[in-house]
Image 1 (cartoon, rainbow, N blue to C red):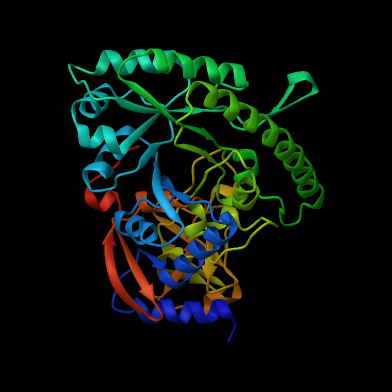
Image 2 (image 1 turned 90 degrees about the vertical axis):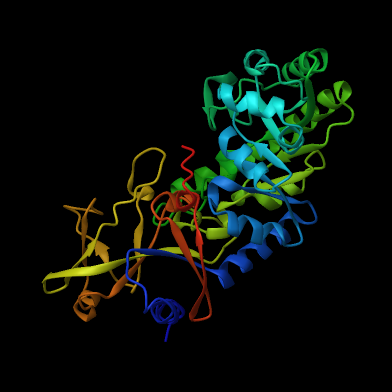
Amino acid sequence: MTAPAADRARYDRATAHLDAPLAIVDLDAFDANADDLVRRAAGKPVRVASKSVRCRALLERVLARDGFQGIMSFTLAESLWLARSGFDDVLLAYPSADRSGFAELAADPKLAGAVTVMIDDVAHLDLIDAARDGGREVVRVCLELDTSLKLLGGRVRVGALRSPLRSPAQLAELARAVARRPGFKLVGIMAYEGHIAGVGDSVAGRPFRSRAIRLMQAAAKRELVERRAAVVRAVRAVAPDLEFVNGGGTGSVQHTAAEDAVTEIAAGSGLYVPRLFDNYTSFSGRPAALFAQPVVRRPGVGVVTVLGGGYPASGAAGPDRLPVPYLPEGLSYDPQEGPGEVQTPLLGSVADDLLIGDKVWFRHAKAGELCERFDTLHLIEGDAVTATVPTYRGEGQTFL
């Protein structure tokens, strides 16, 4: 029996008493992936990206392991909810315009001590001050550095459109603005190199594209290591008690950890290992999060139809944003229909071995987005479900 076939047998046995649709996390794979992130971080703590997990029980599980420290959140409302739930080190990775959230933050010493917010503009400080509503707590802030690679004198830009802060002088200037402003404390710098950490460099069937990606990423790493170090020196000259410099992502853990200027690594998708993280030469992980859809029709030879399954991921639309049928091996979408809102036909000779009610296991494209489709995750160890835990959605929390 092949390893995938053995996994399918385990998952089917573990969930035989459960009706699909359902979602699982294989804890053996989850823990192995966590160990790999720690190994690649080489002694620097890993801050867990909550958007890639979206389940409090699993955030608690991974933060209980050596090598992990703190959460990187995605909205202010989520940050406050996590802090009220007992998480005491939450870095909000994106600027917010949540005025009521800032009023809450500025009025509560526990929340203000646990949550750090992101800024890249003096206007963010103005918005927070205007939202305080009498709250006097010091707000912890982090500056975000633009990591994009610029070529040909800036005419070509590679990387996400995030912070406008690029040069050491720009970040130092904003650091001085924070230092002058009562009610704020600058505690960190963040720089997410998504064009390195979030772009696979070994695209199946695309050798020339893969080579181009590797060349781009090599140039981006060389440029960023020098610029990030200069930025940190410039900001530390203003704020010598800076607590952290955060960088990286699942696809760049070991490269970012090697930079002296970086004190901690961000990662989250590497715990679940969705399909977008299959195309990397720098690491490999074990798929840990899956969802199952039930066979509900057998339209003809070599075809079955499962219920639902059309769970596209965010980002530029394309085939790589779709979930893929995973187990049993050998199934593919009907090119005329693809994964559907209510039903999904699947083609392949293996379809003839599937019966009404059998489960087909899928891998989704982006890590935490699976949890927006399911209110619980069934946690599997060996061939048994050992716990069933709520996702954010299952706790009534839908932050975006």
